[in-house]
Amino acid sequence: MPDSATTSNYSKQLLFCALLLLPLTYVADCLLDALLFNQGPLFRQILHPTAHELAIRGLFSFVILFITLLAIHFLRKSTQLERSLRKRNEELLLSNQELEAFNYALAHDLRNSLTIIYTSMEMLRDHCQLGQHKQCHFLLSTICSYSEQMETQIESMLLLATSGTGNLHRENVMLDQLAREITDELLPSHGKQRPTFKYGKNLQAFCNRNLIRMALRNLFSNAIKFIPEGRNGVIEFDQIVQNGQTVFFLRDNGIGFADNQAEALFEAFTRLPEASSLPGAGIGLATVRRIIARHGGKIWAQGSPDQGATFYFTLPVCD
Image (cartoon, rainbow, N blue to C red; front, side):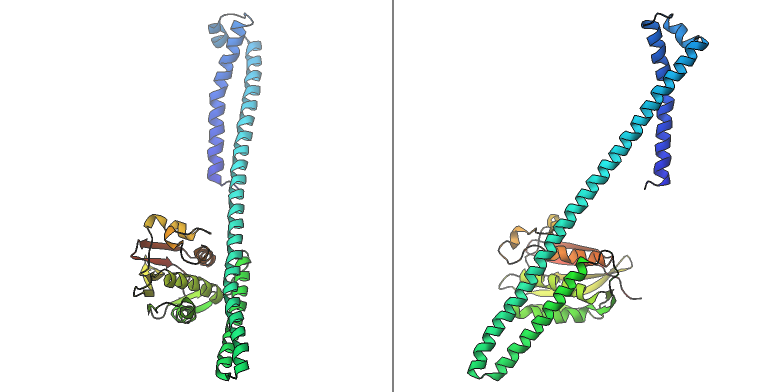
């Protein structure tokens, strides 16, 4: 709905058009009478009209003015409707793209977990036949762990998909402890030299634990993945205060990116040329941005080519 200021400006515009059109239509009618109907010179028609001529010209001016203002009004309404429809179409397109991204994210995460579960079951079968009970116990624990992880992933994706209208369950979450759990899970599957992790202390946020876990998992997974082979990786997770607001950040010394590529990182299915040889579908950061936005926060990135990257984000914190 238009606000009072917009309505006032529109009324002033119509009044201006009316004041401008009235003398123009009067002069136009005088010109018609003088040239087409030979009712005297134009000078007399303008300055010394008869009462009959004045009434006719008033009616003519009113009709022309009414039609013109009506046309302006409907033209404005048509323009507003076109803008509204264009905006709705853009929002619908963005929603469809995000829906595709989350479907891909869900399939990607579940496929990884299912692969580990399937491989563990195959190994479990072989080890049990050989009587290696300790190894069997380890594999069973792995299967149970990743099954629980799959359940959490599914619940988180469903929660994110339906969180646009409902209230999220939030609690005080220790992000540094959550980050340690995530990195312990991620390192075995990456098969790289273990980076050096630096965690801040008492990193607290008031958020949905499962959704933030998914966001941090994507951020840490990228940080580990984009550290080149042979480089001593350093990944730091901490917080700073900017303009009185707590800002969390995750910094790495990986391949980095140019500053003009920062916004493209968060677009679904967009991958930088430097990452083309690495696994991934280009949807992890799009998911992270949606999760952060759902909590009322913001996320942005800074980086330099081959100098690493830093991802900053805000979340509500407990007083």
